[in-house]
Structure formats: C-alpha cells, structure tokens
Picture 1 (tube, helix red, strand yellow):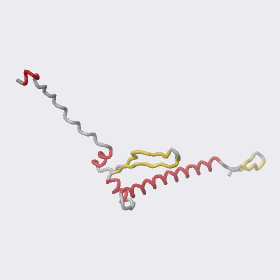
Picture 2 (tube, rainbow, N blue to C red):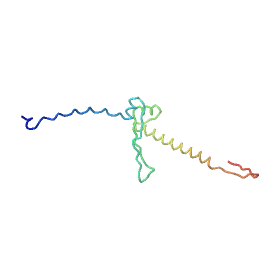
Picture 3 (spheres, one colour):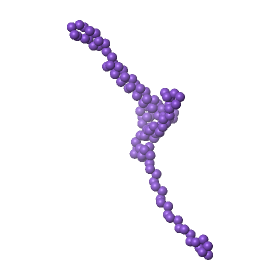
Picture 4 (tube, rainbow, N blue to C red):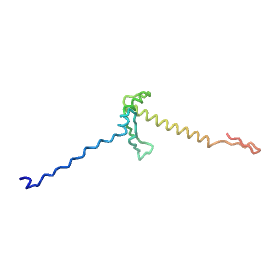
Length: 121
C-alpha cells in the first residue's frame, strides 16, 4: 500500500570506500626510521622586519639524533631550539667569513715604486 502512495523506495547507490589518507613526509620518514625536521611556517613582524618566528615540526628520530649529538634540555622544544639557533649562527658566521674574504680581495693598497713598478698589498 505504501508503494502505491509513495512509489518504490529508491535504492541508495553504494558509497565508494574511503580512500586511504596519504601519508605526510613526517609519517613517511618516521616509518622509514629516518629523522625528520621541517619549517611549517614563518612569521615576520610587519612593523620590524628584523623580528620573526619559525614554526618547526620534527619526529622522535630527529630528537634522538640531537641527544646523541650532545644537545641537552628539559623538553624536545629546548633541544630543537638549541639546534635551530646553532644552524642560524653558522649561517651568519659563514656569511660573515665570506664577506670578509671578499672585502679583502676587493680592497688593496698600491704604492708606486717608480720605473713603471707598483707594489700591491
């Protein structure tokens, strides 16, 4: 009787099985037993472009490597912060050393010795 009043009940099409979630780079590295660290975001203060912050992500293997390398701290964040500061410090030092080497090559003193000779130091 209901079929006459309302018609046949529509059969629902089967829903496709949910696709397997694609693993993140962190998950893949962790699965392979490899250390993982990445910069997720960077914020810069628009009022002072010299101020900013980085958001990092890492896995336990990366933390284990830091501890094995001698980093110490109460939390994983302490270890990663020390490591990141060292990386930044090394970038600054390398840039400074390159700048010093380049400046030394660009600037020199010359002294006219006469007879078409010049001393360069």
